[in-house]
Amino acid sequence: MADLTSLTISEALPLLQKREISALELTEAHLARIAALDPHIGAFLTVTAEPARAAAAQADARRAAGDQRPLLGMPIALKDVLSTKGVETTCGSRILKGYRPLFDATAVARLQAAGAISLGKLNMDEFAMGSSTENSGFFPTRNPWNLQHVPGGSSGGSAAAVAAGMALATLGSDTGGSIRQPAAFCGVSALKPSYGRVSRHGLIAYGSSLDQAGPFARSVEDLAYVLQAIAGQDPLDATSSPAPVPDYRARLGAGISGLRIGLPTEYFAEGIQPQVRAAVKAAVAQMQALGADVQAVSFAHADYCLPAYYIIAMAEASANLARYDGLRFGARVDGADLIDSYKKTRGAGFGAEVKRRIMLGTYTLSAGYYDAYYGKAQAARALIREDFAAIFQQVDALVAPVAPSTAFKFGEVTGDPLRMILADELTISANLAGLCGLSLPCGFDDAGLPIGLQVLAAPFREARLLQIGAAYQAATDWHLRQPALAGGN
Ligand code: GLN
Image (cartoon, rainbow, N blue to C red; front, top):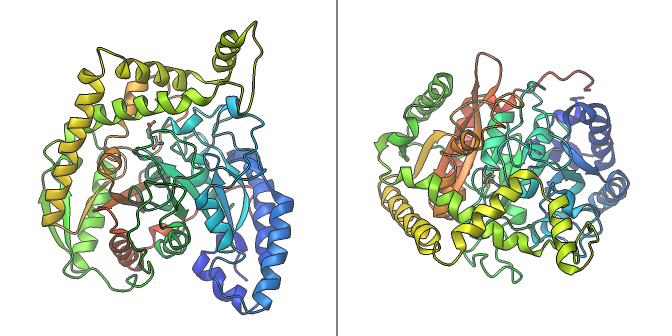
């Protein structure tokens, strides 16, 4: 039998249905793989082995009783930005050490209700601020394709866990690329849903107008299974959309003949690593061969994206992170009085990048600067949204690289916050405009590191993205490649 940790959800499903394997065996195989490999990779902050075993046994009993839900008994894992009832949730920060939420995030509760089994919580950049997972308050996660390289971020643990066969699927969050970029760096498939598609209730806030949770998996079809379970309006999140949730698997076999695909000229400009550009261009040629109508489009305000994003994200972060005062959540350092306690707790609990962003965000929101920075950034955001509304009149989807380069080495970009920020230039527009975006493996560079293809569509067009992704994956096998990991199997 195939190694249980290299299956996709769609491959595991018939095996579970025919009782060739049990959910308990599937779970044990993943727990064993985590025990063998994670000491080298560092994807997990918490492994919940015993609750996972109990849930797996229960899933087997349910399946035996006729329950056919597709995710029943599938081992998954969750970025530590998602609140989990009774299970430590740190958001990658020392300030939340010991925090055990009293409730589950809605996305988590929905996955559980669909029968999925959580193996634990995944490492990330502190409060989702970063692009390499080097900003984790605990330890960095390593890229399963080459342990000297970063897995990307901020959902580095979510991407690395799937790439290394430590979970069939994971959830991450994307405020400015944090699902798509680590998926590209680790050679897995992932989806950032449209703003409002998945409830943010219990998703610890970074930039509330930008944040979305979404799935990582080994195939587009698997992403569809997970998205189906987590999407939809939630009374606990007023920004969640009432738009009906379609059947995300319905169009996976529909092909892409006649679909109009746009290539944003600005996203193929200088600064893109030549091998990344070549792989993405080859993917575009593949789509053309499948019948897509490819045309160049221009994105007039592309240059506004980085400054607008970083002003808005930091401003929202400075407000969202004000609640970590040592009184209500996590760790506390006692001081001489209340104010001293706040200062000591925040001084000790937050890392350097988080502090930098709180200060910059507070500055751009302060009286006298608000109009010049925050107000201007919001105006730029409106222009960016209009650009995309016009573009999506012309084309059904956009194709671009996910990131300008493949995974960099530890420390290579860390000391240079500006360079780290520039690496987000191809992903943040989707968050500013509320678009949905897919990240798909589309090749490797000379060093054997994966390259990611980004597909973007208008808000709530996830079904179309998945249709395009499934057609691409039916014609290619990049998504099936797996890293050779010593100590695995
Ligand atoms: N790298 C970006 C940032 O640091 C994106 C992070 C994210 O999407 N959470 O803000």
